Length: 522
Image 1: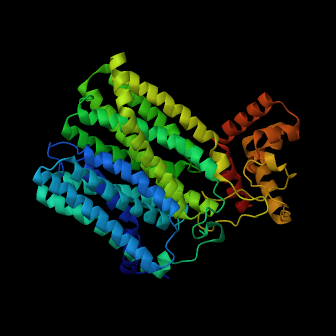
Image 2: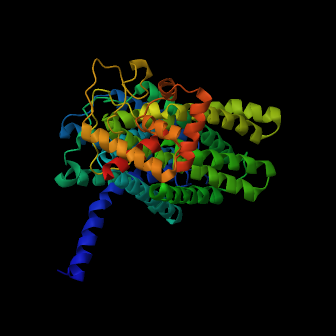
Image 3: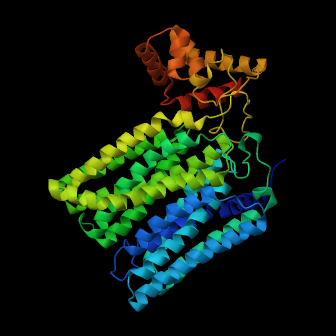
C-alpha cells in the first residue's frame, strides 16, 4: 500500500518536531559563548575574559563537584525547583554583570555574577547529561552535534544584533533551555520510557564505574583544557595579536569545524572513545603552537581558530562520551557528568592559575611558543596516562554479572560472556573481585567463538593471532594473555599490533565492540 505524499511529509515533520527539544543543551553553550566571547557584556569592546570569566571558571568546577556529591532529587517537584534555581542563578549573574558595566562598579560585582551564574550552568549541564544518557548512542551523537550547531547559530545571531536586542536574547537562552527540558519531562513516551537493563541508572549510585580509573582518565582532559585556557588568556590580552572581530570569527568557525569532525567520527568510527579524541586534538593543538613561531598576524588568527576548534571538539566528544559511559557502567548520569565535566572546567581553572608561571617562562625564553610547548608536553604525558587506563575504565562489569545487551546502541555494548579459563582476580583487567563466577551460556559462547573465527578468516590472521584474538575481544590484559599462551612480552606486543593493523582498529575497546557486533549477526 502506497503512503500518500502528504502523510509522509506530516510524519517526517512530526519526527523532526519530536527531536527539537533535544537540542536545548545548545542554548546553555550559546549563553556561555555570548557572555564571554562577545563585547555585549564588556565595557572594553572586546571579549569579556576578565573577573566575570575567572569567577565562572572557579564556580563551574565547584558546582559540578557539588552535583557529584549531592543526592539526586527523588521527586519531580525537587527537580523542578533545582531547574528553577539554575535559571534564576544564571539570570541573576547576568544582571550583576550588566549592572557592573552600567554603574562602573569594581570587579566585585562581576566576580559575584560569574560565580553565581556558573553554578546554574553546572546544574544545566548535569540535567542535560542525564537526559542524553537515556538515548541510544547514535541519537546521542546526532543530538549533541545538533546542539552545538544551535549554539554557534545563536552566537552568530548575538554578534549581528544591536546591543540591547543581543542582551535580551542572551538573557532568554536559559529559559529556552529550561523550556526544552520541561517539554521532554512532559512527554512520557520520550522522557519516562524504561531503560534497557544495562543502562539503568541507580539513584545516587556509581554502578560499575571505576572511580579511580575515571579520575586518572580525567587527567588528560585537564591537560588539554589547561593548554587551551592559557592560549585564550594570551590571545585576549594581546600577547598573541588577534583582532577582536577575528577572535569572534575563530569561536564561530571553530565550533563549526568541531561539528563537521564529529559528524565524520559518528559515520566512520566503530566506537567513540577519548583515545580517538586525543588523536585529533594533539595534531590540532600542536599545529596551532607551531604556527606561532612564524610571528604573522594571519597565522596567529589561524592558530587561534585551530585552538577553538580543538576546544569545541573536546567539549562535544566528552559530553557524548560521558553519556555513553553512564550507559555502559549503569552509573547515575548525575554522578558521571558531575565528575566528568568537573575535569573539563577544572582544566580551564588550572590554565588560569598557571598563567603567571607561563608568563614568567615566556619572558625567560623570549617566546610564548616555548611556554606553550612545555604545556603541550605535559598535556601529551597526561593524555598517554588517560589512554593507558581507558580500557580499565570503560568496561568494569563484575565477572559474575552477565551484561545485558543494549537494544538500541551498538557503540555501548559490553563484551560477550567469555568462554575461557577464569583469570586470577588480580589479573582481570576489567572486573571487580567476586566470590564466584556464573558459567557462560553455551549459545553465547558458541556465537562469540564463531565471530572470532569469522573475523580471523576475513582478515587473514595467523595461527598465533587467532589464539590471541578471543582473549583481546574479552578484555583480558596483555600480561594475562602472555602467561596463558607462554609467549614473551615483545611477541605478544607484536601480534597485537598486527591484529589491530589487519583489522583496521586502534584500541582494545574498538576490537571488543567489533567482535560483539559480529557475534550478534551470527
